[in-house]
Amino acid sequence: MRAELDALVKRIRRAPQLALIYQTILRPKEAEDEHHFAVAYDVGLGTRCSAVVNGGVVLIDREAMASTTAVKVAGELQFDLRRLATMDDAVRARGREPITVSVAGVGKWHSDDGPSIGKLQLKVAVPLPGFLSGLELPISVTLANRTELIDEAEVRANVGFTVDLSKLQNSLRALRR
Image (cartoon, rainbow, N blue to C red; front, side):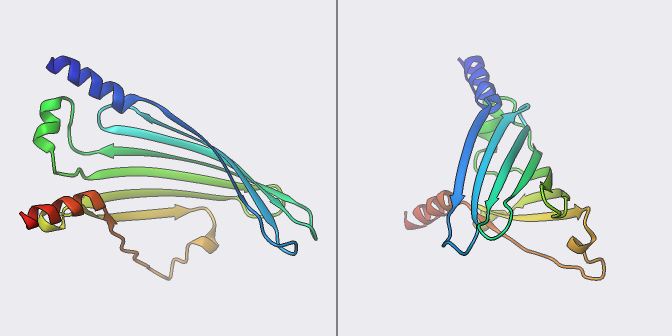
């Protein structure tokens, strides 16, 4: 029974997901319309690694000027630093969120004279312990190929928190008991 559950968990983690996306932004006659076509593919590469690759085309339709096209390709590898190879590992780790490390890249090219842009990001997401469970602190570094996107004389820090509302709700339930 335990081996069957472990095999099922492994199959679920490695199951690929494919999404086809269409989005449009329609504006009044004087402004430009946008049509976004994209494909996203997500797959688990093992018990602690996943990959996401996506690509898309943006058609910008203008009445007064020539229409343009932009192509965007992106990918991300995410590594879970905790080991969850079996159901026993998952039971022992229940309630403890993993530290994750991800490497992501994006490239964007325009059909007109717009700049080609390439970015690479390394991010570490650290879950907060105790009563702050459900919150995580992301720390990241981003590199880009365009000098106007990076101002070396300026150092900037962005602090963000991700809140898992289901964990917050469970914590509040536990306090009421």
